[in-house]
Amino acid sequence: MAIAELQNKYIPQDNYFYRRYYHFFIIALMALILLMLSAIGVVLVQILHRPLPVFTAIQPDNKKMTLTAFSEPNLLPDTIIRFASKAATIAYTFDFVNYQKQIEEAHSYFTDAGWADFLSSINVLIDTVIKNQLFVTGVVYGPPVISNQGPLPGVDYAWRVQIPFLVTYQSANTQTKRKFYVVITIVRVPTSTNPQGIGISQFVMV
Image 1: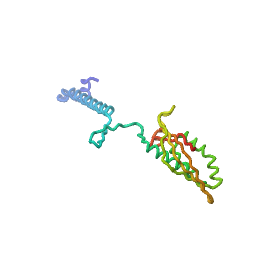
Image 2: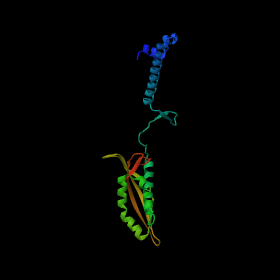
Image 3: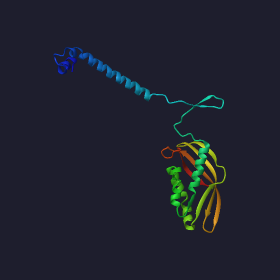
């Protein structure tokens, strides 16, 4: 609709001032709308394309060091070793009464495939524990080491940890201790699965 038609429709014929300047008002309003849209566009561009913040640390010699952010958790060797040691201890601490609940506590440390393999590997042990009414306790008795690490076929990155492990089997009358090496393979997993971003894909006792 033309400005003249809008004037005839909304402004009385005898209102000379408004009829004369109405088109200036419309033009100013349109310019204001365009200005607002431009401002919104500039803000959106700045939000979508703003650079990531840069973090720095001060070294002992007072020099600045840029800290680089990673999309994956930054996993130090000590973190991997603690994770593996804790998982092994939890997985091998249970008794003939509460074994289901106790073993389940280790579930969050495993990948789905790793958990299925682990449960399959301890089926015979669980039968023995129930039959002989045993208490099983596993502890790390020596320093664990990362024996190998790096990418594997179909795997982004993996760590293999060897843990000297002592398992005690105790009943009402007897106690037996056996030493093993637990060999654990750890791979990256989504942080939604494990907050630390890792999980056990293989758990072997030798």
